[in-house]
Length: 93
Image 1 (tube, rainbow, N blue to C red):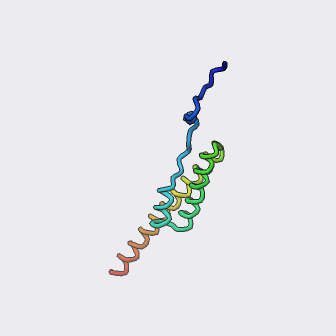
Image 2: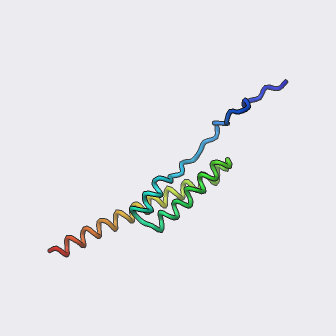
Image 3: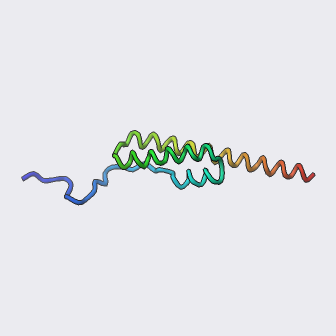
């Protein structure tokens, strides 16, 4: 009888799941930049689907895109906040 490397009922944990960045995407959608945040949510859900299906390549690429969209959204949101504060300060002068 052959020895099985995995017992029945146990999941294969050797597969690495890519991070989805979903929470960060939702935060950026509501607080920073709506269009980029929505795109980041879409790519985050693609990561989740690819992780579930075991498609490591697609999961890794979608995770990278979601991360980059979140960074861009955060930077644009911070720039917008700084510009708003500067405009308010200049108006009061």
